[in-house]
Image: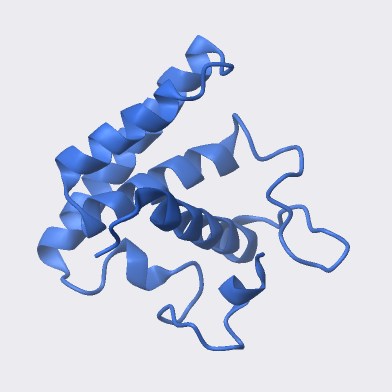
Length: 135
């Protein structure tokens, strides 16, 4: 279990971006060909919705649904510059992720959201793992 939620959030965010980039549509890349998480076009759209749902689902599987809910609210509470509608959208996407994470965790132990890991193989820390190249 991850004891420091920001580390898990960072890792799950990278996973979400890799999945989106490989399975849904290409995301902006930096000069090294890596996904540029700071590029425009990753907020208040389908990428943002997917990321919120994915991270919340991972939190649900790693901790539990109630903790994932609290962490989602805390995260949105620190986003004071976000428009109100954006915060509501994020909280709604978090709810979807918690539901999916809860279903997956309850029915498919070990094969839930986290084992998709953004690509077609279980996550590992191998040198060839694209997650190792995301800064």
